[in-house]
Image 1 (spheres, rainbow, N blue to C red):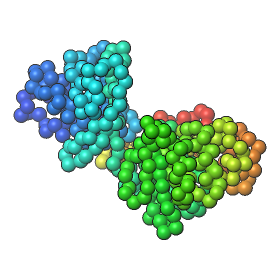
Image 2: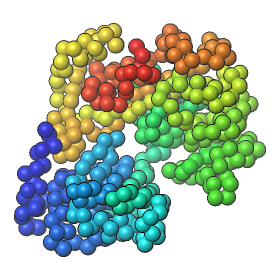
Image 3: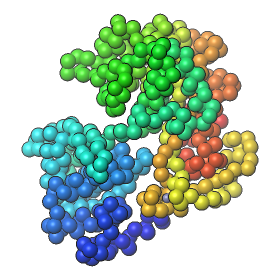
Image 4: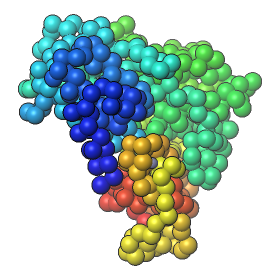
Length: 438
Ligand SMILES: [Zn+2]
């Protein structure tokens, strides 16, 4: 196991003096855990310093979230990096309450109320980088668990062309945006990069269409502030939900409206009608595949002709981890695996790679992520099918017949190019069910 390479280091961290240790920023995650554990046991660190060290590491790792939770063996701290958990290890149980209390103080929560679920925000700076964490504290039977979600300041900085889409997907997306009307939906589970793509689309529209289009967003929360067009934060405390804000914003007649997420029929109805009346609506709907978006919208009770005429395109996506460039090596998967890919892509001659594991990637063999996608483009054929209230399977059949590349095919192409591995694709894209039928 590549991860084991750090074990020798952590033994030294426990027994050695501070001078023998690598600088804190050089430590692997396990080494940091062992060091913190020793510092706490020897009472050489303040709780506030220990919490700072945890947040500092989240920033260094580019983690999406930090989980601090009580377990039978002690306080468990984990970081989610590129969609996968990395374990810091266990800290002494007695720091559970003071550490959660410290987090609550930083997030401006009521630290003496341990029976409530509470939410807040922490602004944190480390190594010249500033970050915001969205904090949630929930009472469990073993005590409070805190999850700190780190806002990605890189959201909004990416250009659509730099996200890593296959050239065909990028071309289809740009063509949809170029129309400046109708509804474009991004779909996928939580953590599939929908927000990053939405922001990249807005940026594309601003860069290419600003002279023709006023842009407006309705978000919950606003994760990245562009400062170039109107961004509106949902505020349910004063009754401003997606539907209310959307109705209000439409009276200002913007050309492009980005709606963070559509969850209810009211928002969906207004958004589709906006798409029908010459506006462009960019949004996300939480489903597994592109064809499912059609059935989800129809199942909400939307009239089929409204959906059929308003929808321009749907992009379903997942994020797969990239093979770490620092430790990448060529390799040949098992015969059966190669044959599986050959059959799916109907070609041969691939360049497979994997990461050996190194310090740069925390011995995971992966560093960064890249989107894999399937795109449903609405044409006359698909529009007439939607009028018949079709099943997800028949939408998929029609789209596949018209040449839609499936999520699985797009992902396997990335394996064939050595960008990611087959194991990683199988972790992220399920083989059974929607999104993958060959
Ligand atoms: Zn590496």
